[in-house]
Image 1: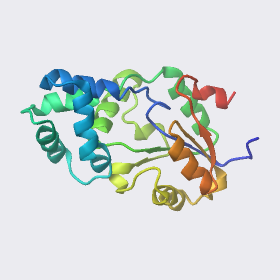
Image 2 (image 1 turned 30 degrees about the vertical axis):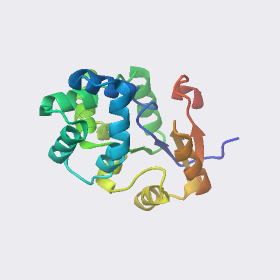
Image 3 (image 1 turned 180 degrees about the horizontal axis):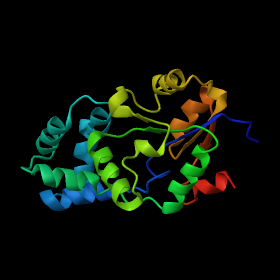
Length: 205
């Protein structure tokens, strides 16, 4: 049974926006003529996702590291297109839900993400919803690459609490990653492990 909460904290991927990371491996495989499994291994071994998404290098450095990691002379446009291919769609009713919630209580976003993805998503929100950016939908957005922090490390949740002035038990956190939820619960957050096959609106009916 949920206790009263003072704010809602959403994850982004597969909570607000539908994603499929396998599509990025497939896109790089098609560009480099390698198997998807080999691409997955090379990216995993280099810890590329996490390093880029905690801001260890900028976009230009990221593209060059992708070229070096995959051993293929991809153009900037090819890297960006493959990298963004995992980003799918945002059902309009989710945007409506966030706006309805925002009228009643603060809503925040906490995402392990990166500059190239956010630039793509900002454009998507402008074109599809007339909203100038992802951040415009929320009271505040917490992006890992800007914070230099990463879920599920405790420090990123502590930073959210410090910035918002809230206590952990006052925040309802929704994420599709079990480790992220476990870390938040250990700190006292009210937390829901979201199954992407379901819809977040069900939590607020």
